[in-house]
Image 1 (cartoon, rainbow, N blue to C red):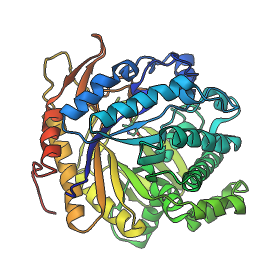
Image 2 (image 1 turned 180 degrees about the vertical axis):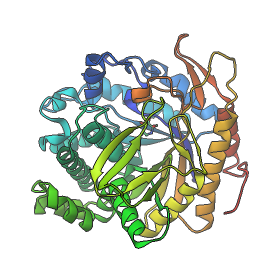
Image 3 (image 1 turned 90 degrees about the vertical axis):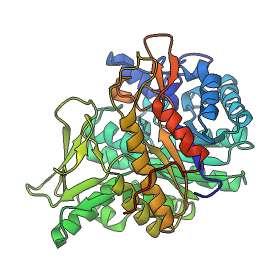
Image 4 (image 1 turned 30 degrees about the vertical axis):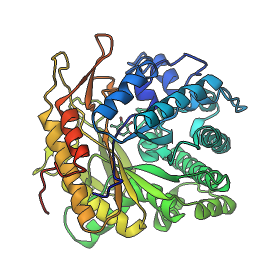
Length: 463
Ligand code: NOJ
């Protein structure tokens, strides 16, 4: 791999920090939602807020040269007027400095789902004013950390947080409304372009991109009907984020189609011009699975979601788009996620050919229930999962794709949203029952060998 390839791991503020009400951090939409519904929450999570030095040292000892993490808007900006919380700034200064002292490159996501509750009060991502507020928050981040950060991502996974929040309804704000999903999506993509503009106007060092939950789409066959279903699924799963961020345009056929049933008056020409003029420098792609689709059969699109790890997926319905199928030949996790490394290779090739931008694989990993009471977790399954996915990346690099980094999800076990702490992805086990003790798993040792050898330790398989 290229000698400057980033071999790192990733977390998100709400999932790891804890300290939810310390040092001036205000409430986020997730705090309010989880507290109100009496659900397992991230009040403490992995307590990175108090363990960050230990965690960053572990990254270094594990051979990692980069750390992808997110900043918490409610920790940095205290109110709707944009007041800065100096203690929030201090915390991230300490984290960034600690990374640099340990030879770890910080890769910073500005927003990873933890909207301040004071914005949720007036509709959250449905309130157009949130775009300007986000832009202000992003500028505060660039001004305070921009001298030491070279990699910025405006948003983490607009699709996943908005589809869950506004279409399926199992993430805050818990809605089930296509029009609202569209409006929130528009606002988030516009806010992203505003932050890119601010970044460029301020002449900050480094590069700015966006992180997308990438779901490459395959059809069950090659008929015209299936190709239409594939295009619909690709628009739904990928294009509205990637085309908009990288090419500066929402996919025209998607907009035309939606305009037949929904109101698109939010899309103002002067704002579309800002989107057009402020495309990203790189793409961050999170890869967990592809999507296999066939044409709709009953006038309905059924999408399967399993956010609980329990039998029976949540289904949502869109009118006449496509239908998702589970490949009977594939292996699936307990959470119904298909294990399909080849999809990463195919997806990287497609994305690089289409967008011609540097790509970072900003998340990849596997979530399972694990007994971490043992001295060493032997997560051989995770090792083979990661090996096969990194092999897929190396094959794409061999074919000429410009891929510059790989981040394992996750650095350590985290609070995994609606799955609580039960679904573990970490390279390092966190004993949530015993003082949050950290114990590197076998995958951590294995990943060190991979990073130290710049990929040579990967068992290769050509496609
Ligand atoms: C995507 C998200 O960015 C992250 O927050 C989540 O926990 C992981 N993938 C695993 O589902």
